[in-house]
Length: 203
Image (cartoon, rainbow, N blue to C red):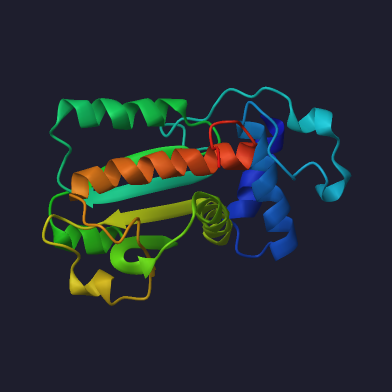
């Protein structure tokens, strides 16, 4: 849309004032959502009818709006897990989701660019609502780009485990890295539904 084409360059530009970048980010999120995004209509005097206009959902292939990447070592081999990941990726509309697989730890470290969040058992625990707020704040900070990093079966390389990136824990329990992939993708979807104000998330 014309609105999203105007907003996206501001998101990706480091020269735009923070308040303008935030408004541009919220505009893109709202335009890519088929439902109203809670709380954004009050910014800048925008009318509710603008936020409720149906826009064709953004997919990862178009790379035209807020994009979340999940990067991990090794491909998902189990068919049921592939189907589950594909289902959540199909449902997503507020952000584009990319699942990238790399061959080894060296490639994993190399993929940790821009705004990154690394999954680690020592990381901070969040409720789903807290995770939603944190994820969209991170997307805003990262110029509408955010990467989640998942280590291999033997854990994270030291460069990521002790690096500068934010650490996130899904649970104090231990999961396989492939199961962690699915749990994270579901929480990303849930975070988007919380942002949209849908009835998917219940407390």
